[in-house]
Image (cartoon, each protein chain N blue to C red):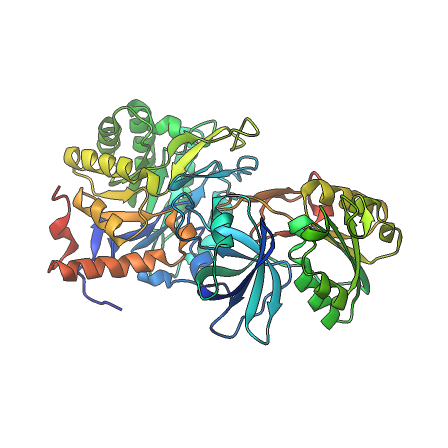
Length: 304
Length: 252
């Protein structure tokens, strides 16, 4: 293992041994991947979205493959924050990596309540506030597509949560910089972007939509150009460290996000195709620095 | 324990122009594989295929560290798999899913079309455990009846064909073997067939296991896309299934 600190980065108080994290909803709670990789080799893992009460999620079918990507409409299926605190936390709290909890809700109060509960967990250094899920009827993306709502929910959670607060932004907006600034003004420590793009797929033979909810969230290689553009725009306009997400399939993609201003990255859909891709990306980023004779990853951050 | 490793194609046998049996060599000792489990295949060389393809395990040859997969061509991914040649490499995540619960003294296996794929390896395991079995296969015609010789060696084979070219003419649901007594029924095939067999089993109070084929992305339990509606809520077909007891499933 490479013990040099050339890939070490920091998101507020959270130190990551490398910029490679996993995107919420694509990595379970981490332990599902232990047959394939050593979780300790990652900068961090972001676990499945957690809500105040158990959610059954949306009906099947929840997935459709699309060119260079996929649509999903899982709808935040999870057992609720108490189950997370009492059961799942015990299984992951001693991992030698940053375990970040993705927090979601239908109302402002729910976000605050979940964040407060996670705040009591010693070994969770950060939360990622999910104001951008496109697959729920109430809350979710409704908060992250309006700057006043974003300001309100981030301000309220900020008061209840005193560790590193990351806000995950939606690309389904006219002006992402406006939303990013609202989150920054409300006290966010970092921004992660992008959540999935609202999309749709149709079966022409059956003359039906392919997803039970008709629309869903697009992820995978197809969304990378949109994600790079969002990170680049926001990096120029805010001071907050950014976690780049969207279609990262390999180390080269990860480096591209760093070049447009990201401090760290999250790997999502690629985990479904290659369960050891995150470790491979860490190695690939080390190789890149060596090949270009770069002493530390921060030297190339935001050079575009 | 799950693995993500390369296999080598040793044979690609054409059954019909849309049905193939791929025999794959594992370069190491095969881990324990349960009947009813499946693999997630990385399809290479087809730009429109983004995700892996879940395929059930048709047969396992422990002695030679080989597995067999039945591939029905339904789209671009499976079409690409049908073109594989001897010596080609294939990356698999395996073994996935829960597998069949092997039980009873006399059991009935019912398979429909290419959905019957996981039943061959189940027959091998049943035979090893000295469990008596009958297998009822329903297919379009005699050309679509694969692995017939193996079924006959391992079990009592009964067949229905839609055109009457082999066995009884008609559907499995009308076959007289269903009137005999069994401790458990294992069924894989088209959903309407599985539902019909499940109804029959329910009437006779026989536990019935089915293998669900739900669209999935990861295959390892993290994406939550492949859920089946059970009496205990939405369960992941790739982890809790693909084999379910029909009394646990809503809609069955």
